[in-house]
Length: 279
Picture 1 (tube, one colour):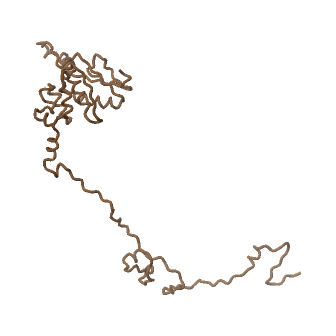
Picture 2 (cartoon, helix red, strand yellow):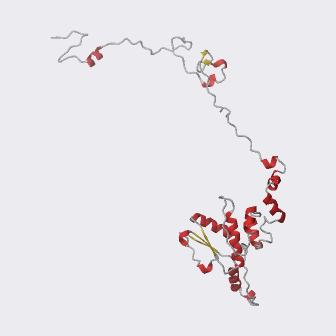
Picture 3 (cartoon, rainbow, N blue to C red):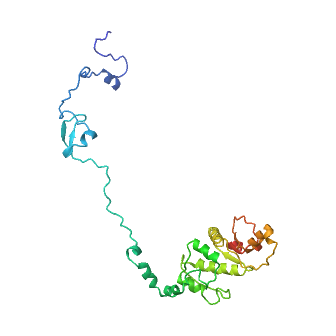
């Protein structure tokens, strides 16, 4: 049997959907050789996105066709600005009270009756003759910014028999109130005036020991103990003897804590700064 032209022939089985789709014909208008007009109607074609360069200076939020100056109508949005807005919360200006109010610092000092009492005699200064401190020690304190003490510190140092080492002192103060300064002055004064004495300063942490060690070594720099030695007429000719005497008069501060590599013995130490387990 011969098949008629223009008709598909099913040779075997059933016709699938793929076969049906292949057999369908579509009417497609060719667009080859056609050019789109520039002035096409805006109602029949979707609007294009506005150009940022063309709309930046456009008044009344008017949208323009990209690349052209033909307006397309107003839009319903306002382009956000890149300039940050002004903050509502603004920090106020910091003003110094003592600088604006003349004599405020003087009135504050005069308001304390204890300070007036000690200021009159100059007992708030470590160089006062009552404390009888070494000039080198006072100079070291001054180099670290400690030239004046608080009235309660002066009252502690002036307790009967305290500077002479015949009485003990128990005192309390808030953190950062200056407790360590009173203890340091009493300890150093005792070591300088009595070279045979030794001091042990116990601190709970290694970091505190290291910090206190640096502090005390700066305080005792060039400070000599009161040691009466017979002057040898041949001493200036012997540099080793001069060096030994200098080391003997200097205040030696040693740290004992976990991880330290010090080889100094107890005999070579005047002040031992250590942790609890090294006592």
